Length: 311
Length: 199
Image (tube, rainbow over all chains, first blue to last red; front, side, top):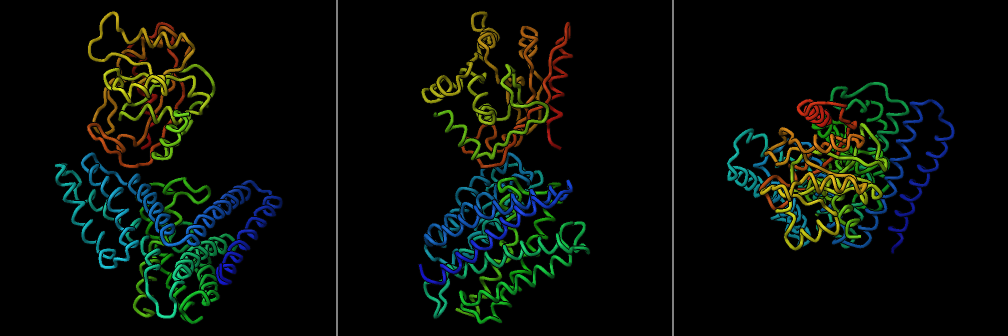
């Protein structure tokens, strides 16, 4: 383990320890009933963060295959949450089977064999053609366009966009060979720390709601404070990226923006379906999709920016 | 042990969460009656029960489906299913007899009073079996159970399942009243199940 990786483990571990201690202190000091509920949710979130960080850290440390498998499972579970919420009909059954058990693994397989050409078009082109064909074949035409769009949309967000994160592993960046896992860490860290900062700033001094109808918990103060803190954190991690500190801050800003929009769009989907969370797999957070919505929107933009300017 | 594994895998694959709305998972003798949407539904309901309850609960299933070598083994040794004849019911193979027998041995039952599966998530009319069971053993509570989404995992006629998150909702127990008529009881029991259906 080289010194950079050791330092990153120390940083993340330290943050988790601080968060856990804060949880213990808040539990003792907060007395009001509504405050207690917030603290309990906070403690559940921190505990889940421990698990998520350990899983992600272990996968990154073991190597490319483990990382791809982890992301593939994540996509699978997110797609499952998405499809569960979308009304599909009997006629979609076979198309869904393909989406879950063939298209999703295939997308990650293109990454395993570094086949960039297929990676970028498998879902936008081939799945887009295949899903409506398979559904039409089954003969059920009711709400046909909505049904096929939902399956395609789920595949795009939960599988295609999410797979852009581990796709960073196959970029060939001059002078950065063998260190791509750090770039993936950078993306995931900035996305998630931005969510955490926005939540924290929003809880401490959030007043003005940005999108009261779509996502009532998002406030202007939370977004600005959290976003700027996350940019600073990203800039502070320039030494694990091929970027200069200023470029790292810019990349972090793009990640924060897209992550914010990801949360907004996926909230709109939840409101439309009349639910608060996508699931309950991760205690305190909701479902997998509630945790990766911002990552799904940030990953493709971060990938392409890096590919155009640094490869 | 096989049973434990099956229950674990089922919960993992379906996300099958048990939601106890109208009663608690207590070690009481009960008749769980659920909507019938898929061949897997008693497996899901059975898996959603805590282990101690599972050991005292027997699903009622169709003999013709659960009698092949592999399924038969599972039905007999793992689920301890009460297998009943659906096709040629005679006086000797009256399904009520074997169910009453299991009840008198102190076991809880899982039954599907619709008898057959309807396409989609429509809830069919109830067969009279549940009424006869309740009338014979009025002290046993009938717990309505609504299994959500399982028809999307494995619709009728499909072989390959699609992973979908399912929930198992347990409602308020229904007990037969003295002298209650068949239609009245079936109506009440069916409404209790319908009220569990999420909007």
